[in-house]
Image (cartoon, rainbow, N blue to C red):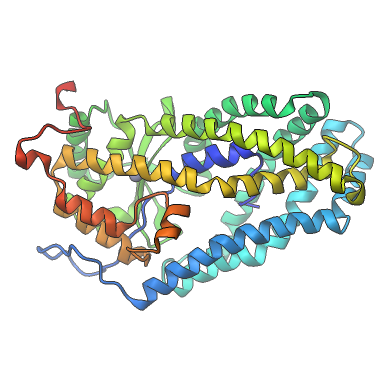
Length: 425
Ligand SMILES: [Zn+2]
């Protein structure tokens, strides 16, 4: 259900936004700080196994999700849910919302074993988390609740539009734009705090150093938070999220525990790059544009499928709630096929943020050693197969990022910086 993403646009735009948000891979190294920095990842067989397993799960998860949707259609559950919903609620809109609840609960149940394995069993097997099963299940249930509340009305509205409007795909695409923007503004304020506690940085010294760095980057005021992600994971991360009043940089507490001061400043230089270069807006604009293509082909595939199998599945026509699994299946296939596009764009802006961070901080070695820690700590292969990186990596592989940050020093040759503009301050 957490993987149940509704429409092509949401899929792609969310993918682009989430690519920014779902950040870098991470490191280990529980020992006390050593003065010398490790600039090369110590690659272990465990790390490689973990990476390959996640790659396989990524593809299996997609196929399994589409399979579940086709199953719900094929065995007649979808029609039964629709009939039950329509008996329970007279108004079509309410019936469609109720249908969505039945569908979402069913898909969640079908997908639970895989979700449990990927999100609970594997991280425990690889010692990436201490979270108890009860706590994990609590987060899972909250996620389901949030999805129901948000997507039941949205899907009912979408079905209504599909039923009533000839060029519905265009209307859905246009309608997705304000919804996505609203979602990005509201998520850090409303959704994220449901799962974790966010607070201003506690470390005053670090805070001052970061404020100073932020002001050199061109960021006004304090927009830096820390979050108790150690509740869910031992891995580390930092990210930029939100828009307008909710725009902020967030650091996981795990990162604050495991990185030294210069490494934190280097990582934050990267995040500040996202912030200053409007990467959230750029990601949204990119995702929304690409999703137009997705909506166009999605509409074609949706109607083609209904002509072909609609009668077999017992679907009454365009916009029948019972057709929703087909619409979602079509959207997720299109979203999946477009993932290299979103990933490529994301890797591009991630690389820009690396450049910006280095130009701002000149902290090449700390940046590299932070990447070493990311890789070792999250047990991710720093040099994955090129196809995997191309298809699904939102960031350049850590191996390539380390290579880059170790050689990028235009200032040493007296060259001007490319992305960071000191004149602005
Ligand atoms: Zn980034």
